[in-house]
Amino acid sequence: MKSSRSAALFLILFLCAVLAFPVPVHADTGPKPSLRVRFENLGEELCYGTLLSEKSSTGPQSAWDGNPETAVYRENPGYEYADFSYETWLAFAEYEDADGYYFLQIGWTVSETKEMAWTYYPPQNFKVLLYFPQEGVFVSSGVCERYAFDSYYTVNMDGLNIGSVSAGGEELSPYRSYDYTGEILSLLARIVITILIEIGVALLFGFRSQKQLLFLIVTNCITQVILNVLLNVANYFSGQWMFLFLYAVLEIFVFILEAAAYSIGMKKLSERPPKTAVCIVYALVANALSFAAGLALSFLLPGIF
Image 1 (cartoon, helix red, strand yellow):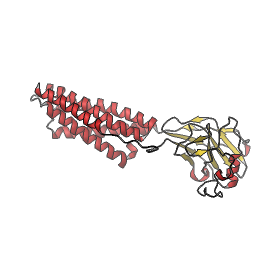
Image 2: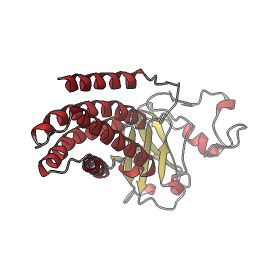
Image 3: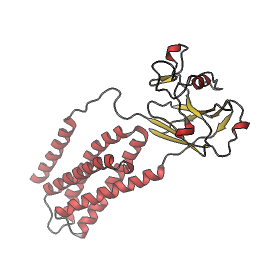
Image 4: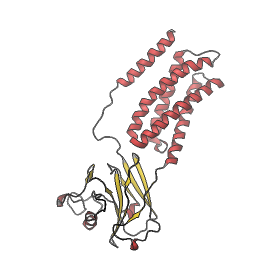
């Protein structure tokens, strides 16, 4: 009874200590939503592109207000970084979308980049608009929307005959191309890595019987599947900072659940039941190591995190 009370007190003090640390919040810090549109089978003919926005501004980008000093083209002082020359900028600025979508004075030479990557406050609802200056032809898509924190679209240009496209016609068909298969594989990789770490720690703590290891594996499978599915959902919709924040918070609750499960289950499965304190320390060490390894791998091998 005394050891159980001590274990409960330890859990409460640990949780309070973690939650007591302040988390600083700063304006406009951390990763922002991104939007990438990739083009397949795009020829070598000069082609410029932009994403028309439903709103007249987003982040630092905005539609031209008629003031010559705020026109974003290379020849204009202060905008030497712009991708468009005056002639190209003017063509986009004078383009009239049938649904009233706006040109926010940002663009790409897509015949070179093969994609448009809007990585800072991209529009929520948008249209893909391409301009072929040699023909003086615009080709646009229908309305698309950002569907994830990092949204990906692909446009297959195969079979598109620029010469037969009427100005302003909706000829492009972007489709969502988020790498769901890669996300599932990375999820499985994280779960396997975490379980291997925690089983390794279990062996160091003397938990070696078949029943003990099987119980640890089953418990870890349950907690890690729940943890990593929640983290994947957070990363998909809210990005890396929410991923990291939830990672820290959820690991605390995983530790508490596993410590309670081990304190009860390991005693029932052992001929020489371990002390409650040993089970709690094991859960703490195993989760701390897996958490640290997860953070390290998220930066060293971002492809699986």
